[in-house]
Image (cartoon, rainbow, N blue to C red):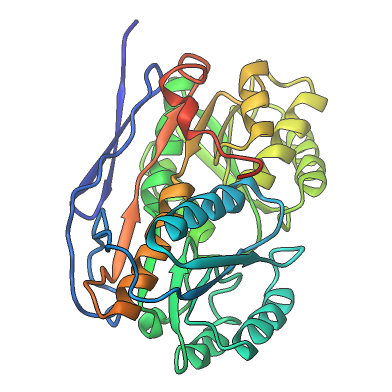
Length: 344
């Protein structure tokens, strides 16, 4: 079977993915002893793992939203690493991906004076000042998402989201070599990670004359809303050939909308994230490829950087993790380990 490689660049890291084989990025160690004071600095592709912590530190993990397998898997990685290092991790998150719900959780956490806070900010602007204030009395590690100016953070750990968006378009391009109309299903504007994915996808589409970029639709991180939006989009553009779903809940709804419209043979869906429902849709043929992040590794590195900062050790200010492309060909084989968890 012929393999076609997709290239996406993450700083000095090359992401190579294939629709017929399980391929993932492999990090190399690059470290720094300074805090994350330069948002434009190039990221490292791995973090230095500290030894056992000097104290039994209290690390608080605030998810972007409860019930999302991406954050559950991140929690699993954080808890496993905390056990190795001799520290504790307590996890909580808002019911929705919403800064008005996340900020009260942060306020409550800070009142207990934790040693460190690991957090996925739910808005680049709304969470800027609360986290900047928090950093004056505790170590703040950003995981997955960021804010407008993350210079207050001890470390920021996330996927190469623009590269992931480009990889998603390359997957759709392989599935639709003759081109056609494509769109994005996302959450809300102002979420750093999905904004970057959309940019990577849009830039790649606009650089290929065979494809026409329709628009981005915002589902407010609700699968039912995404399904309704997808149905309406297909009524407006029944000849659409591809959809990039930018996160887990958007993907669930997109797959439902395509299935309800009986367009599964025509519309190729490439989804960011790899939760159980997305894997089910992949096996059923509603979704053709998944761009799986490494949330377990992000959680691990988040604890590592918190402990390193508290112990006065080596801190990597910015870490960019990679992806695994999951298809029907590898979902039960090499790529199975990349599927997100529903519980730890």
